[in-house]
Image (cartoon, rainbow, N blue to C red):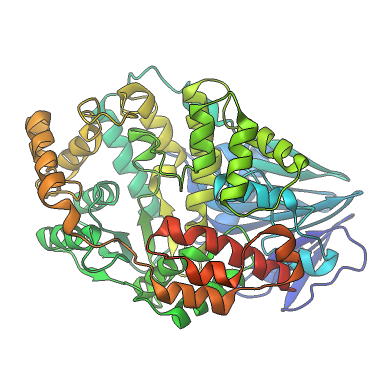
Amino acid sequence: MEWILTNKKNYLPSDGNFISYTGENYTLYISDGDFDINILNQDTVVLIDGYLLPRLNSNILFNKQNPSITIKDLYRRAGKDYINDVKGCFISIILKKNKFIIDSDHFGVKKFFIYDNDNTFIISNNIKYIVREIKPDISRYAIIDHVLFNRYINGNTIYKGITFNRPSQRFIFDGKLRRDYYWNYNTLHNSGNNNTTLSEHIYDYKNIVKGYIDHCKYNNISVPLTGGVDCRTIIAALLSFDIKPSSYTYSHPESNDSIYGEHAARALNLQFNVHYLYPDSNEYCTLAKEIWENGNTLVSLHRAHRLYGIKQEAGDKKPLMFLGYMGGDWVRGLWPDDLIISRALRRRWEDNKDVDSIVEDEFKRKNLKFTKNDIEYGHEVLNNFAHGGEFACFLRYLVQGVAHMHFSQDLNLFERYTIPVPIYMDIDYLYSLFSTEYTFHRTGNMTRNKLKKLRSPEYNSHLLYKLFPASARIPVGNGYTPSLYIRSRYLAFMQKVLYDKFISKKYKKNYTYDAWFNTFLINSFHNNEQIDDIFSISMDDILSTVIRTEPDAFPFSRYIDIGNYINTNM
């Protein structure tokens, strides 16, 4: 479904088959697809882009076949507070003749784009319908955001004057377009005084998983299965309901994730698939073009091999796909890897005395041509994620950086082929978790000292054992067995030490880069005056760089992404 809301006079979508609904001061255009045109004749019109379901312990009557009926009834009874009874990955649009309300999910996973200037607005879930109309310049601020954080993080898209929705952001139009927020992530911290027991939390966890099974329409269920514990815990919950999902990985067949995933699948009698995109610059280019053309400029092309794996796993079934994103982050904390948590942000957290030097150094490392004004903006935006104490900084970045902008890239890509369920980003799960003793700020897991991190496996080890005991007896990819950890964390620690010393280095990387990626870059590189005004990068730089890992490849992906959007007319 593609949709456009605008009050711009004489606006018409540039292509596609659209039907329209005209309010007093705005017009909605919606692709006719499988949309029920009859609802446009009603007094209150509700559109759901994505999926939603009732909150845990909600007593609403939910219409699984037509959720918009549920939303209309909730809105009639509760007004804009209807949002407190639902969750999911969605954009909800409620229209009346003289006004409308747009809401997205708590973390703003589902994205839409906004142009709002001089009381004229165009809002759409596909940015091309805005770009083609206003023909914007490239946003300098967005490029700086990406250089400093490895993603667009501050509401700025690559196009100047076009922004995107933030977590829990609401847009209200009643003659004038206004912005508001319906949820504050800081309430997670105040959700309880770690008085929820593990047994109570497991009860919640199972009911949350069951809620998606009961309220979403799907053909089958699929879950990634690797060496980690987050997806394995989801599978344990499904097995406790006697549901056997299909399992898969898109990692290299000789990687830790593939080998441990296959071992776990065999032990649990599950189907297991390895969907690895073997190095091929032509295939990678085809996938990158699909990413560029999907109307969401926030998604990086370096996710191409993930997209390949998801397409292979989904086939033509559009499965309900439970995903383990954020499972470790809330429990084990942030790990400054200079990729998800960028080098600039890590350095800012470590040193608050000379922020300008951090910013300037990052600009030079990333080949960005910069001015004094660029440094001032970089200083400001880094400081936005470095105030209020350690816990406040980490929670802010987990919400606005990791959930909202990092993992949402995959989720927005995958929804074409699956119904993606990021269970650890479920709002009910988080309130339940944050009322236990197992969140990162209570366990002390955020340390490089391995002995001090002995509590790190505690949460998932016990969940696995309580949900489906057999799943706890299978070794995980970082060297310990959950059931052994439950018996003795010190024995499990020794098991991990031996693994790190004798076994861990024999596996291949999850995804390997080499000369083929240089070929892809050269074939894709847009060398024009505008990109030359932004970056000091040349063909010789690409040819002379040895690219073997994701951190090696990522900066070059940035050049290609930005070069593509400079050169495209969408």
